[in-house]
Length: 216
Image (cartoon, rainbow, N blue to C red):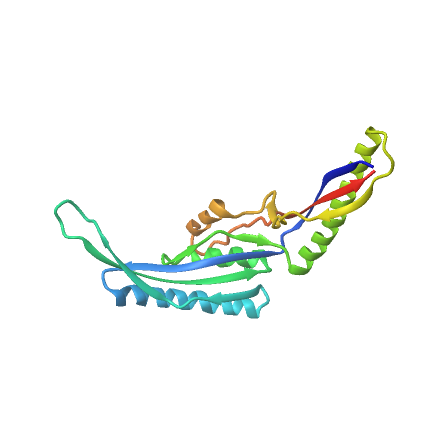
């Protein structure tokens, strides 16, 4: 008997169904009260809008941080005393199921200088990801069987039988194609105030891999 060790792989794609974004409300001032006042007002507006979008069904889940303030000393010139600067900040994170509503919200946020929009993270619904992951694992085992059969045939061996299966560390689902995130999405914060931002969800790729031992 000869041992055959192979790796089977598979990948499936589906349109992204969820988009998660974090909106930071941030402001600097010479006094902590001034910084907090600006952020508190901007953050409250973002929270109110997120609550309304959730009630309308556009947001699946969301949460908001409390505003906080920090300070640092800023260099202003040679021989001049450093300037004490206070920075207030708060954030709202929301997971959207309606991409058009997200684009409209980002456009609205662009009208307030206190808001900064981070990158958009695209994902699948939990049920969809579980279904695709299960099917991808099945296909990965089929791929391993086909590879083992090829090696057995090439070596003039009998039909290979599985003796062990091992799953490597699973790869997370990842954006594919037009899905936006990272540096590209960071530019969304510079959109003209009030104008909806066009977002392309693209596809998410779900991968599976398996290491299988055969004897033939």
